[in-house]
Structures are given as C-alpha cells and as structure tokens.
Amino acid sequence: MLPVEGEDEVVPGIRFVSAPGHTPGHTAFHISSGNQQLMISSDAAYVPALCAAHPGWHGVFDQDAKVAEVSRRKLLDRVIADKMMICGSHFPWPGLGKVGRDGAGYALTVHTA
Image (spheres, rainbow, N blue to C red):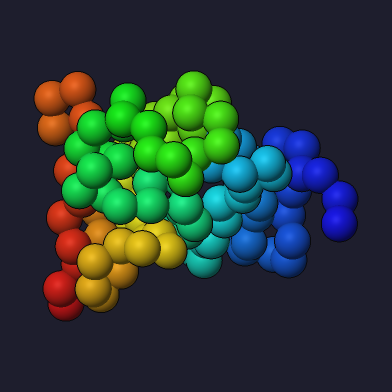
C-alpha cells in the first residue's frame, strides 16, 4: 500500500481523491468518461441526512473529526461546482444523486431515473 498524494490516476478515467479524517488514508474516487463525472465519496459523507446536512457534526466513526469535516466540505463543494453525480457507501437507495447547498449544509437529491 502506498499513500496517495493529490489525485493519482489509477487507470484512465479513475482518480484517487484524498479525503482524510474518517480513517487514516481515507480515499474517494473521481470517475470520468467524456463529460460525465461521478464522485464515489466512500465514507466522507457516510449518512447524507446527517453528515451532509450538518457537515460540522462529528460521529464516532470519524477518527479525526476536524480533518473529516474539512474533507467532507471540500468534496461536496467540488461535486456541486463540477455538477457531478455522487454516490457513497451508505447512501439511501439507489445510492446515487446530486448534492446542493442547503443553508450551512448540503442536501442530497437521490437519482431516480
């Protein structure tokens, strides 16, 4: 295993995205094909109804709460800015959606089609 610095490309169209805080070396993945993009957030926002809506809340699952919050906000802001889809390890069915700003937090709109 090697640490990820920046956004190393695994194979064309798949990049590591460093998202520390949840666990040491926690990584998200940026998938792209043409102009289509998807962020696999892994556990950066493990329960969107809680972690995305209230990015400053810290569960016991985040081993470094302050770093996890910074990673979470950075990742969600990027998803919004780049207008990409997002999925995560514990997102509600079907596990895919769009994120938008909602006051001081974020809201996930689940993709249904």
